[in-house]
Length: 244
Image 1 (cartoon, rainbow, N blue to C red):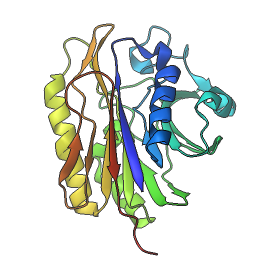
Image 2: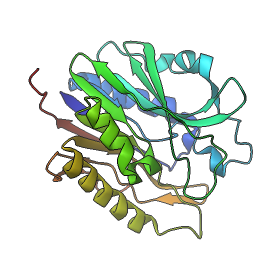
Image 3: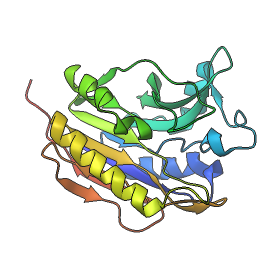
């Protein structure tokens, strides 16, 4: 299986994200990538930092329509967004688009370290496509042992981690956060014997900064690929498919 992690630049903001993801999808199709993972909240940005948190939210029943420009017969795509639930709650979500259909939406279990406008998700599941069984945890969820352990028990061999480490002024040092994320990936991979693929944002926009922590870590805990520098970057790596 060939996977890709898209590290999206913050430089132009979230408004043109669909176009930039389409460019990456074309490259992925050209290079026979099976699964593309995009960052957390790559569409619209993080609602926690928005003056109007619901402005860029996508209603649950409209996600497939909103992601229609990203439909691909060849590449399964994981897209981070703010989801507007039926009861008006906002969720930090990652939609899985497979052959033009949304086959599932994962909601972040631990929206923030302190407080958040997002409601916590409650469910974990694996996604099964012809070449892989994978799970998703979003950013802060990777700091907790249980989600990855549970997904591994459900059969996942790859863990995708959509991430958005963009921090406003006065928050943590972005470089330190990127280093911490890398250490988390190593521990998750080693302790659960699975591949960890993280896709982060990088650069600066509207006062927020991120050093980027995108990378691919193998089940032994070895970081086999990591993003270098800022700006748009696509990491592509071949992952062995376990024998059935």
